[in-house]
Length: 119
Image 1: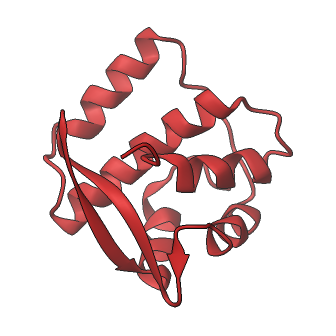
Image 2 (image 1 turned 30 degrees about the vertical axis):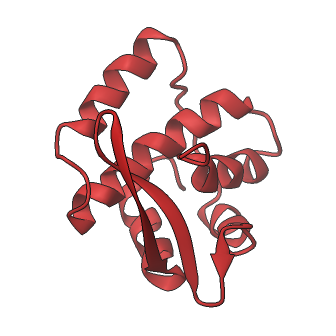
């Protein structure tokens, strides 16, 4: 569970030239990964809005735009990738999670579709 939000977070850090902090990048990664979880049916639909509200209160959401191709390239090199799959923690409800295995291509498609900070 410790890796929640890190796959996208590390990609955002890299694609931004490390101009955004690790905490803010992982926070944005958590939001995007929760949206992916909703789309895939793992995550309760109220989780993304809860995370947005909480991270806003903590001043951990930053309006950024990063190059989508750079971010997606960084994801393909993630340490959680095994062959054609990524093994990721996925929040189901606040306080609960499951480990999921998702095809890397499907994950990249969903990141491009759901992560609004990719340009």
